Image (tube, rainbow, N blue to C red; front, side, top):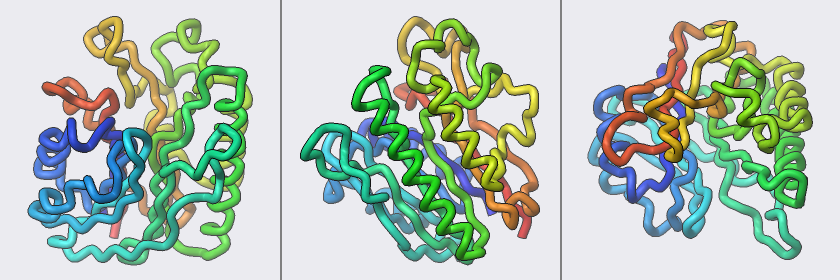
Amino acid sequence: MKIATFNINGIKARLPRLLEWLAETRPSVACLQEIKSQDEGFPATEIEALGYAAIWHGQKSFNGVAILVDTQAGYTLTEVQRGLGIPGPNEGDAEQARYLEADVSGVRIACLYLPNGNPHPGPKFTYKLAWMEALRARMADIWAAEVPAVVLGDFNVIPEDDDTWSVKAMQDDALMQPESRAAYARMLADGWTDALRTHNPRGGVWTYWDYQAGAWQRDHGFRIDHILLSPECTDRLEACGVDKDHRGREKASDHAPVWVRLKA
């Protein structure tokens, strides 16, 4: 079972790249973030033509998450929950489309797009930390259900210094503040396993490269897309990686897909 996460950065603009990636790598489950599309604009027909079923939680121009499942390979998809009940950062804001949870053939999949939190400090950073606490509480509920589980997506957190090309360049960013890192570390302390870190203990693996300042060409990236595994899935972890070459293609997302493969 191959489970992947991909911040697509606009599903309409990147649809050719998404379909290309699905066809070439054929993940069993693909979790998408920043689809930036209202529900009615989601390209379900094109995705279904490749043999994938999909559920999605959209929002106009911003955010948005989706879970795609390879039905040709026999996987089933049942939605469990959308949203964490956290309103946006400003007074009167509705909840943003950042969380979607489903059961896929006996594995609980939680797809998330965690708030960026910039500028720091400020209400957006406060919102980020509140959202992380709500996520941790939901992860505790999943843990209590005693189901194999994978929590994955764009966490917008650089966990360690060796998860970025330059600590100095990122030191004032919300992605790398002590509070962000501590909130992420608490999830791991609860018993969840960071798959990429497990297989790359020395760091140096990036999942994001900015469009600006030649970041991709200079390999100035950092790791913010994570896959967290419950103990049941950690025991089944066979391989994990980053489809880095997809970041270098024409009109690509600024993120690369990240994936794990679990033994049957």
